[in-house]
Length: 176
Ligand code: CMP
Image (cartoon, rainbow, N blue to C red; front, side, top):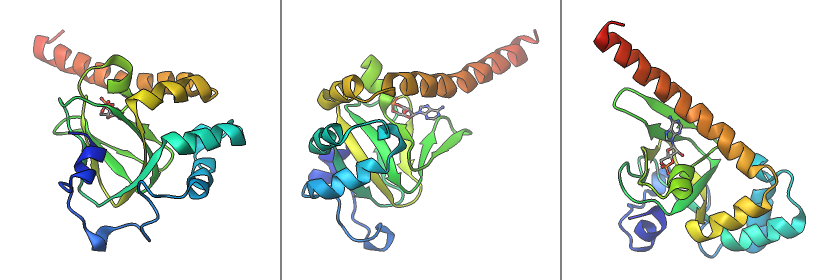
């Protein structure tokens, strides 16, 4: 089950000690607050006020406590996540963990190819997230200047080390 559904049905534990600041996030967050937050996100730098206003309508802001599992490898994925505050950790394998910081995003792979989540992503600290559902992701792709380019570049950066590691393991096992 994806993050929003788990928050809504209460299956994500509430951890007041680990919470980020005042609870100004959530479904009730004021549009103006959201627009202010969107303005600070590098991905939306080239967007007009009108565009930011329309994104504020489709984006939801959530605070999650440290150690919350945000996406789980192998499960279906319907949400795109942008980190506003805090650090998330991508568990690519048992040995490889990639930290993601404010301004970075995750969850794009399942939305782009319709496949299951490629990795488990966990909140390494309390994290504030901007969450965009699958049906709104296409709006974002059409409207945000340079988003497709940024997604492609990021995907290449994420996939290349995995390919190199697979090649290294192949060479080590065959001795070639
Ligand atoms: P998705 O497969 O939808 O869900 C898990 C996400 O983790 C994935 O999209 C990427 O956003 C992210 N991810 C997967 N592999 C890596 C990696 N090697 N480096 C950084 N992020 C990754």
